[in-house]
Structure formats: C-alpha cells, structure tokens
Length: 76
Image (cartoon, rainbow, N blue to C red; front, top):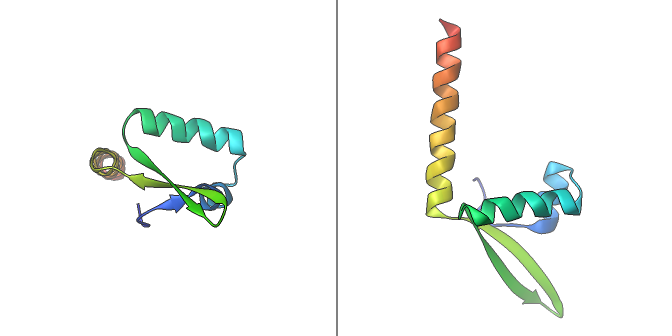
C-alpha cells in the first residue's frame, strides 16, 4: 500500500517467498479484484507489476480498522 506499484521480483524479495507461493497469492488477490496486473516490456523482457485497485484499498483499510479495534478491545 506504500508504493504505487510493485513488480514481481521486489515482492518476492520483500516477502522472502518462492515464485510459486507468491504467484498463488497474487492470483487469489487478482480474482478478488484487490490488485490489477500491469505487464510491459523493458527492452526485450516482460516486466510484471501489480497495482492495488480501489476495492483492494477499501478492503485493506477495512482490515486495518478491524485490527485496531481488536487491539483496543484487548487493552481494556
């Protein structure tokens, strides 16, 4: 959510996961319309990036709000 878009290799390095594991999670997020895939050519190579959709941003914020509410309840 910090970056406007993130490419596959950066995701893989940040999350320290395998190609297959990352691909399956990305596929699930794409099916839910939480992210969109952006493919472009850099020289002769394909570069795949991912961008959060409006729905993805909304659901992420909803998730953060639920976590904050849970933390506040546990502090009481």
